[in-house]
Image 1 (tube, rainbow, N blue to C red):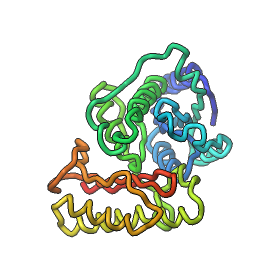
Image 2 (cartoon, rainbow, N blue to C red):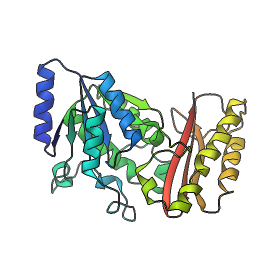
Image 3 (tube, rainbow, N blue to C red):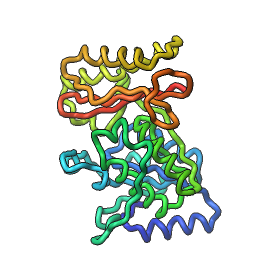
Image 4 (cartoon, helix red, strand yellow):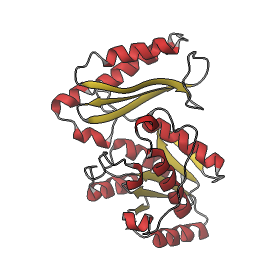
Length: 280
């Protein structure tokens, strides 16, 4: 496995793989990798001849009050996980490699991004779309792999790929959880022992909501209420949003009569965690 921070070296390596007739998968990450990321890499390795993992904490998707500087980083650990999972190349650029001094071009979207996380993180998805577009242009993969935990991001990337004719297959992969149900996240490291226990309320609330939907409940408000009421039983939890939306459009639904995404964002102390379930 190779590691490079240079766009030119990634392009040269991919060009060589293409000359050999090999397929290429891409797993974009912000690093501090965990079992959730590993599951993406493992699947990519199973479905492609070569796999590139990008490790880049993208400054463009962080707001001025968000945790860019404190976002956890551990490149040695990341490299070990990637090698164990079978990755071929890690692309680990500096911000200056991705965004030159007079950088002024962006990829934005005026659907799918206004609700859910887009409400409180208004610049986030412009940063996501821009950096992912750049990665697609650098690597030109056959397939790219994204986790369902960031469900809005997955929907946005799929829509962007369709809009801009990237010709890349976007593969969504299931949420990977701890044994007690907490969705794996790099931000879980921010939680102290008490907060870590409190964070279990997210999956417990979603489990109750899913049971209600699977029992045949069609009233989306009833599902929202069940999830909200359960979260509110935890004193350390502060709700950012609880939403039930159409899985294709991400628009709020009142009646459940098609594929839906139930998504939540909750502060546990100062740490904002997200989780969701999808019912097709």
